[in-house]
Image (cartoon, rainbow, N blue to C red):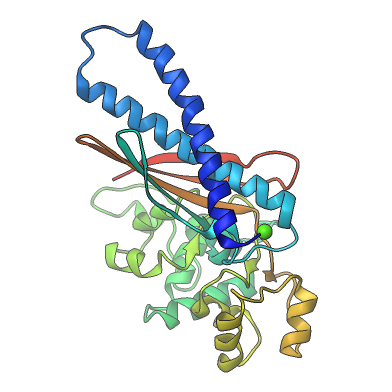
Length: 303
Ligand SMILES: [Ca+2]
Ligand SMILES: [Ca+2]
């Protein structure tokens, strides 16, 4: 599908979704209190558009699963953002991001509850590449793992309970990366630096070589820096359709447990501006494949 047609299709999906929610809104308005203020109406309408934006993202990702499910790349329709689409009195923007283009912090703990050595090593290298202390990996590992025994440079309850405002380590998988604010050694600047490169997904995931940042691929792929730079340049026009294709291109063996060419987890950020109301919402979506639209794992307002 060429890009123009892709964008036209996305726009059509969005308009249908908006029309459907607008109809719901009209019915809702009929029964609403007559003295409802303008602001409340605008906010409700903006929220409807935000939901329509989420439906647009789900529809777009389902369409992608059905037409090009074998791989996911930045040249595909889902990766093209909607920028400032005017709908009635509102302006709607939407962007879908492949969360498997990032390092999944929950990978630090293996399915059996033990530390995943390889993933801790990858995370340490990623931290170093961003000028951050690699020891932070131990603190994140301890935050997620089920035990109360601190790793070499980590922290468990004994540390967190000694704080002025004490709390306990989560000792379960992270749901959102903002939890990092509670982990020893992380402040706003550290989280901001790391944010483009890390995610928190509910199961172990591999990194999509078609969408991941060069910095992450440098530490995940067993390839020289120059090869990774070339890969990042070429992949939009000629995405890798399989890990075998990548291995052939790189003339190297590719760790299939660490990297992949397709994704199941995406985030979506929708912004709506209407009258004096501006709102944004973001959500994490899990795409089951061709069987149905992606499922919303969480959704939250964003300011
Ligand atoms: Ca695809
Ligand atoms: Ca722990």
